[in-house]
Image (tube, rainbow, N blue to C red; front, top):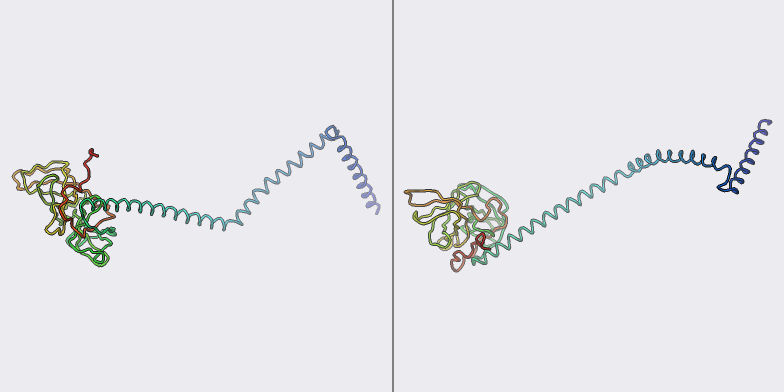
Length: 292
């Protein structure tokens, strides 16, 4: 009991002293003699608070990250899907723009030559018995396509229809070694035959029937046309001569031409379902370089 009374007495004295100190400090303000003690206390307790906060904040952030991790992963996956869709949309838009440009060029070429065409797309590259260079297109007999029809694109001659089903057709390219198409030199009557030579479609062979006719690099050749325009219609650009072979004593002259149509990257094509009423001659050839 005596200890308890003494403790209460000491506690009361300390509280009274504390109240007196607070009152003096408050009334004297910045001139208070207790200001250094107050500053020291603020420094000690403030530093302790900052240290505890620096420890607690990272822990809290870690706990928050753990709790929200599933939602964050879902958001990341959603963003990935959205980005993939955006990339796909951009690619599709680019492809559509390129195909629209090719289709416009095809329509322009057909208009210049007077050809009636059915546009289509190359869907596969397929080898056929007896032929090395052939492609499958997505138009067929239901679109008016028949075997032995001319196939071209916005740049020039591609080949001919080998066979056709109701919805698809097989086209043999002029680059195929087994193909042959009548051809003519620009601005002349000299005729010959174009054969495929492989080389991945980069060159075709032009065999001029008259060995005395002039033949030089840069000369341009167009399709001569077949009887009844089957399988080839006249006036379709074929290619530009890159080199001429020396053939002394031969009855024919041989040259190699670079096709206008990129036969290794075909996309939009047109099947000529209606031949022109008259030979367009050189009207379908593109402007010569430097004359634009």
